[in-house]
Length: 331
Image (cartoon, rainbow, N blue to C red):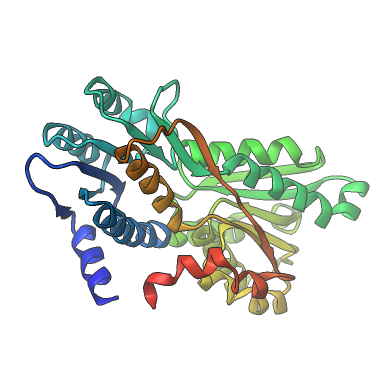
């Protein structure tokens, strides 16, 4: 654990994890730096997974983190020039990396895109969470939860998105596909996946909105557990004179910090639901890169399934394989 932590902090400072010699087969993994909880966990899993898989298969490896699109673009040029034999790329924003990613293909290097799509792009393979299904299942859950209210008329909600990448677009579009037409999204917010930003946005809504605007909101659809926790904190801390009628707050990722607070927020009147989306999924993308180096054919889009977790089943989920693997690096 101490070794993993040391490597994580090195990467968080913009350094690289490297084990390579000249004229040897190498996998390069390029990912965003740790700007919030999910990416922090992802960096740790990327480090550990790349080191383990490359070492087991006799390959060299390089893991690079970046804080901006420009930095990541420069890293792509770097690993191309260093002769990477396969590249796993988690783009900051897919479309902004399109030209740099094309350079990988032009160099005849297999490219695995992870998590965020690049529009109209012909990469070797894509590995991502099933974001459309996450949105669809959130809509279905909302339909069932508010069945009585929807039969009587409109149900007003707020939406808290992550950023402008393909991930929130897919989750929103999925939600709109299944959600009842009587759901009305009063406002939507872009949080950049930040808990503090989401909390501030929710607090501002509660302090600046009219009585009608505040009291008519019955649910909040968020795109990440960090965001969900920020919204819940704002609801818990509200001391204004208007009634809070929010009954349900949704999110994505199902981390320990959120799940262990489900009962607390339920006692305050807020039910929770989240959909599993593990930071350890990055290792799946790395495994596909290793498979390519071993001569296997890897193509197409690979979606990692999601699982609904709410107040009724969170304890069982915390005993399952997805949750256990997510926190395995802490053992």
